[in-house]
Amino acid sequence: MYKILKAGRLAGNIYEMVVEAPRVAKRCLPGQFVIVKADEKGERIPLTICDYDREAGTITIVFQPVGASTEKFSRLQAGDSFRDFVGPLGRPSELCTDDLEEVKKKKILFVAGGVGTAPVYPQVKWLHEHGIAADVIVGAKTKDLVILEKELSEVAGNLYVTTDDGSYGRSGMVTKVIEDLHSEGKTYDLCVAIGPMIMMKFCCLTTKKYNLKTIVSMNPIMVDGTGMCGACRLVVGDEVKFACVDGPEFDGHLIDFDAAMKRQTLYKTEEGRALLKLQEGDTHHGGCGNCGGDK
Image 1: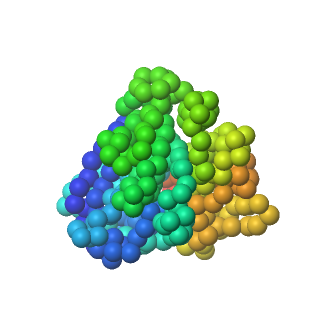
Image 2 (image 1 turned 180 degrees about the vertical axis):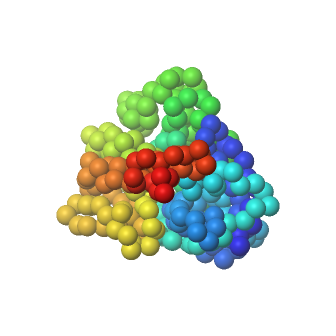
Image 3 (image 1 turned 90 degrees about the horizontal axis):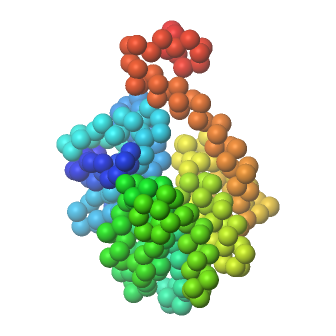
C-alpha cells in the first residue's frame, strides 16, 4: 500500500496528492509517469510525475477526474492509500539525459496548458537546478484554473501566464503568446509543449512557422501504460510508436495529431458510462445495454 501524505484541490476540478513511494522517488526523472490503482479491482491509471523528493521518498501527482477511477481518486484523503503505485515508467525528458553542456547552450521555451502544467514543472525545476533558465508560458481557460504559478515563478527564467477569457495575465491562447514573443524579438532553439491534444497540435502548427523544434507529451492517449493494450499507438513521421514505452515525449512536428485525437475518442464513451454508474450509485438504471447498470 502507498500512503497518501497530502491531498487537496489545486484549482477548479484539479487535484494534487503527495504519495509515499520511496522506490519510485529514488529513480524517477522528469518526463516519466506512474501507474496508479486505488484498490484491487481498480482501473490502472497512468499519471505523469509532477514532482518528487528523493530524501523524503515522495511523489507528487496532479490529476483531473475524467472517469470513475479518477473520480474515486479525488475522494481520497491524507492517510488513505493506493493499492498500487508503479514506476517510474516511460522515457525521461531528453533534456535530462542529453549532454548537459549542450543543453546549456539552448534557449528553451515551455508551453503548458491546463493540467499539462504539472509535467512541465519538474522539467523546468530540473533545468533550474542545473543552472539553466527556461522561459515558460502557462495557459488556462480562466484565472481560477491557473495552477503551479508560484512554483514555476521560482524556477523559470520568464513566466508568461495567459487566460482564454483575459481574466488574468495576458489574454488569449498560448499560441498567441508564442507569436507575441516572436514579434517581441524572442528566439528559441527548442519548445516543449504539454497539455490537451488540441493545444499541442496548434502549438506545433505555430512553431513550425518559425522552424522551432517542438517536443510534445502524448500522455493523454495512454490507457494501459505498458504497451500491451495498443491504445496509445501513434504515427511519428513514417514510424509507428507507442506513447507509453517509446515516449511519452516525441517530436511534435512529426506526429499525426488528427489520427491520435480520433483514437483518443474511442475510449470516452466507456469512461462516461462508468462515471455515471459511480455517481448515480443505486439509482443508476442503465438501459444502454453497455455499462452493466441494467443487470
